[in-house]
Image (cartoon, rainbow, N blue to C red; front, side, top):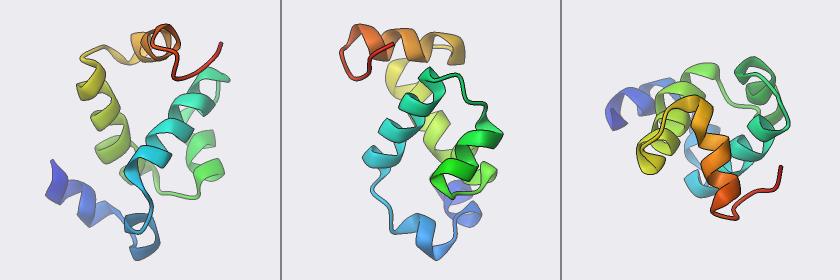
Length: 80
């Protein structure tokens, strides 16, 4: 998975801290933004978002996409 993600990323995207992007993504998702809106806000490609960051978040949470925001809120990493 990591190699596929790197092929999607530009040099600017690879220079970002993954934790910062994951935190930003979760916060924007909790505000109801769709992935197409989130990539514009974070200035990353949708390929990068889906193949690297969303997959990473979901695997770390061991949850389905719809449950990721609820779990993050319960853990105190974001507010609803």
